[in-house]
Length: 152
Image 1: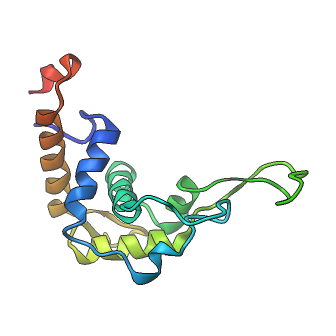
Image 2: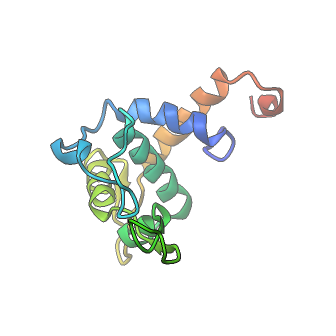
């Protein structure tokens, strides 16, 4: 059985993003929101919302139970001290918690994530794990790489 660990991440996320585009809908404000305070402009990708949702689903599957605070730390970046002269050193800032929280809520509504009892954060539901494994199998079939033939 093929799992998400057996396929390349970039191909896996693009395929999973296409699947999630049929299950979740980006909010109206998503095209205007920055992905973090270290950014100057909103993302330019047309499918940014679905790629970020696929990435969050993958990280929750690997590291879960995980919450918004840890995810925003993962999606953060370096922010320079001053906008004009860049005189201050670069400091780590967290990513947008609103985007992450909204995606987690959408994935939970779609039945792909769930809140475990007596725990903080979210984990992948059986339906979500099935989707991840099925997507990994599809990705493996489409790739024509000799180093991945051992998984077929």
